[in-house]
Image (cartoon, rainbow, N blue to C red; front, side):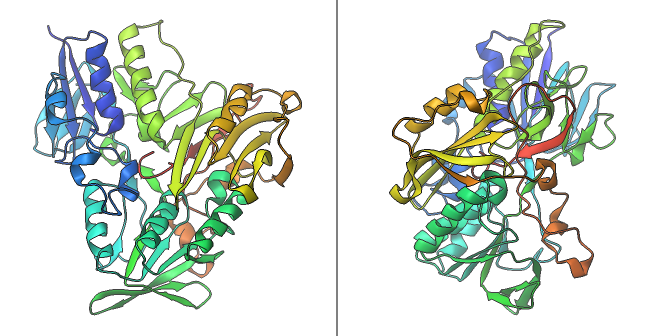
Length: 462
């Protein structure tokens, strides 16, 4: 009987999976299920090129229609998966149809977190999908006062794009700097300065207590301290959660995503890839989940290789995280684990010059690096990741200076829910940024298991 493989999720990870299957010689049945009607598209441009109206939707497509049709895959777009029966090996669709499978790859990605208020209110937006971006772009063209809640990668990019369009923009976050949890407060201070230089108003260390509404929609963001930020358009960018609701009752282990083994296998005949996959990283000392564009493709290829390899021939998936963001003409790239509790030092260039490399050290090892307009300068750090810090020699031209000496536990930065943006008077937990927290050091395996953690995207879907 002809083998059937079903891939649920038609973004970067899902598309890469079906293409890799065909490229590796798989000739059986292949179905790609996606809940959006659009052809598979790339997410990073949504918060930049598409939002600033320099790209049309077709430019975000990952493949032209003729290339996509040549993959020899049954496309089920605009059709949502609603259930999974691992015993019968069937996926239930929103049409009521049941798709049989021999092997299943789950690549359903994320859904945006939302605040307790604002659903259905005109002028309140999230940005995850192409349709989200098009709706937001249409409103930005009207010239509103913009408030962005959440200064992680996505929120900072949206604020930068709106400000570059000449709009009045306020960026709100509970932390002391933008990107505090993604790259640490030292580099985050530089991001804050970048935004201020370009006219973005920053409201930091502030929780959100609610939204003020009027007849025409949202009017202001109400802050926990009693003040308010006037706004005609509010973008909520407080992180995302894995899209696993449809897997309830399936018998799969679910937590912060689909819990897999080191080979990205969730159960016999079931695999996961991309933002939704949570697996024990062989060198990170615990479970990780990566919300990065590069990982989506790399993990999909690794899953296909393990699926086709057969029992006993699989290989653990051990990527080195890589992400990027573009803001106000500045390109920031990260590699490894740039956790906020790491000791961070400038090893090449300087912040004053607008070009530098920062090295991140934790537990005596080099665990990550960040390049600020300095991709070439990251090469030495890339080659030294995981090695003892004492063995890392900064470039001779560098004037090494310590930005931050961290001391907090990385696990303290793992967010629980959107309630972290609600002030304490609402009996919420201590406020934290809701973008996903960085993972532990990339080094020798830890002596004790670390908690499951996640790395936030460089932009929408990076």
